[in-house]
Length: 257
Image 1 (cartoon, helix red, strand yellow):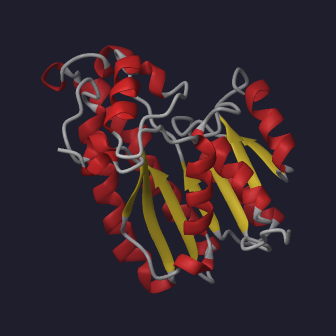
Image 2 (cartoon, one colour):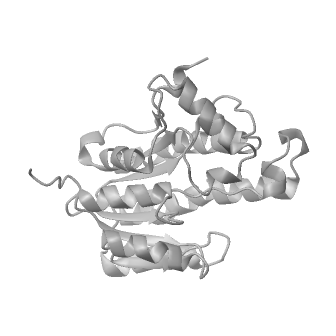
């Protein structure tokens, strides 16, 4: 069988690999299979041992620290990419965070500090990355971020992350309009519930997973591998005229009332 090389020669930055089970890891493996060269990031020294095996598996050229709350780290990542390749074709933004006490409570009880931190890490970081990526995408490019259906409808126990994801999807649309003239497209992928460490922070997450499996028209949960394949497609030139979209990868779950 002929090897898929539709990302051959593309340079990709994948932000948000936590371990081999994270969505960003699924994207990294799919990009590697399609021939992309990659830079990955890890949150901190504690996370590094969990991300290094992924970087090794996909043959990442760079593995760099990136905590978006630490001044200068984001700029250092993009400077390293410029030094290594001189350009960037693909950016995957797969990070989100909310303090547990705010995530597991009602939206009406969310603290100001918790809300602002969730918005900064989950949404404004995409804006900051887009600003840094823009001059490196002088021949166009693809920005992808990760959303969830809770940004469109109220999902039980998703709580304050619903408004945060709604803001993320609105940001995607604005960035798509602003960056479109430079042939940079911006899209959000919206997978159904996944068995990831990030998802497990949601209260009663097992119930959410079971409900998704039962209500999905295809009666199955999405996997990180499937999300990675869709990400690789939207990173490719085949989708160069698709921008500002939220693409659901959930077995049809989002169409259910």
